[in-house]
Image 1: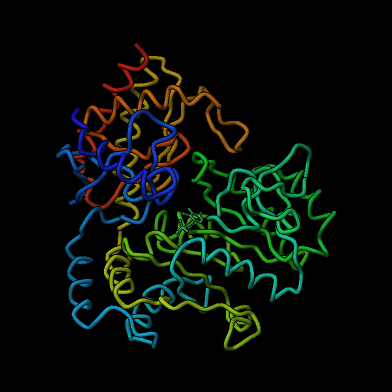
Image 2: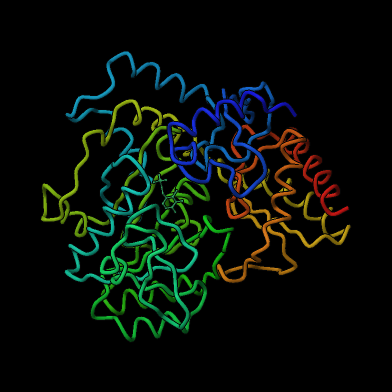
Length: 429
Ligand SMILES: *Cc1c(COP(=O)(O)O)cnc(C)c1O
C-alpha cells in the first residue's frame, strides 16, 4: 500500500502540532506507520491522500452513525449555511434540535448545548456540585469522560483510592476530590458510599464503557449504583457521549431502562460537527445560569450550522426500527468473524452491543473491568496493519471500539467480515 503522501503530510504536520496531530490517538503511536491523512469520506468508505480506499469502522470515533456525507446532513448544513455561520443570539434551529431530543427522551426535561463532549461533562460536574453543595465525585477505573481536569485520574491500588492524576498539569487538590473505584464491583461501590456518602455530589459512569475496550457492565451493577445514589442523595451522572443516540435514541438509559439524574451527550448529537449537551430534570437544570447560580456559557454554543447537522442526523435516527436494524447488521458481521475465530481456535473475540464492537485478544468470555484487559497490544498492532492492507480502517488503538453505521450495508459488512477473517488467519499463522 502506497502511503507516500500521508507520510509527507505527517512530516509537515510535525512542524505545526505536538506529535503532528490535534488529538493524540490520531498519531498512530499504538500501531505501525505514519497516520493516514484522510481526504474524503462517502457512505461507509474513506479515501486517504494517496488514493487508498477503506471501509471505515472508526466513523470519526463515533459521531457518523449515518456514515460519511449523508445526503440529509449535507443538505441541511448547506441550506442553513446560506444564512451565515454564527450570531451569538438564539436561533430556531436550537429549538428544533432540542425538541427532537426532549420529545423522545423521558429522562431529561431540559438540555443545554455546548461544543464538545468534554465541555458537556465538565459543565455537568459543575452542575452536580452546585446543585448538591457537595464536592466529591465517584469515577470508575477505565471510564473516559473527556479531558476534564478532575476526571483525568486513575485508581491507585486498594479498594477505593483518592484520585492520582494521569496527566501532568492537573493539581493534586483537583484530583483529590475524585474517588476512583473499579467497574462491576458492588463491594467496592458499597464501601465507597459508606465512607464518603456525605461528601458526594455525584457518581459519573459511562453506562456502556467504550473508551477502554468495551467493558459491558452487569445490569445488576448499574441498578445497585442507581439504588445507592438514590438512598444517599447523590446524583447519578450517565456520561452518554458515546452511547447516546448509539445503542438507542435515549442511549444506555433507555437500553437498560435506568434513569440517570444528569446526562451528557456528544459525538452523534452534532451530525459530525462540534456539539455536546448536558441535560437533567427541571428541578436540577433550574440551577443553571441564568435561571440559577451555576455559571456556564459558550460563544459558539448552539451554533446554527452544527445544529442543522444534528437535526438532520437525529431525524433519521429517530425513525422506527433504526436501532434494531443497526444491531442486527452488526451482529451478523460479528457472529461471522467470531465463529471463524473460534473454529480456528484463535484467542480472539469481538465483543459487541448495538452497533459498537471491540476487537479483544482474549480467551475470556467477558471483560468487565479495565484491569482484565491484557496488556500486550502486539496482536492488535498486527491486526491493524493486516486490516489496512486489505482496505479496512479501524481506530489506531486496541482500546478503541469500532462503529457500524446506517450505510454499512449487509453487502459491505460481508466484504468486511471476509477481510477480517483473512487478516486474522495471517496474524495467527
Ligand atoms: C468522546 C467522549 C468524551 C469526550 O468528548 P469530546 O467531544 O472528545 O470532548 C467524553 N465522554 C465519553 C464517554 C466519550 O466517549
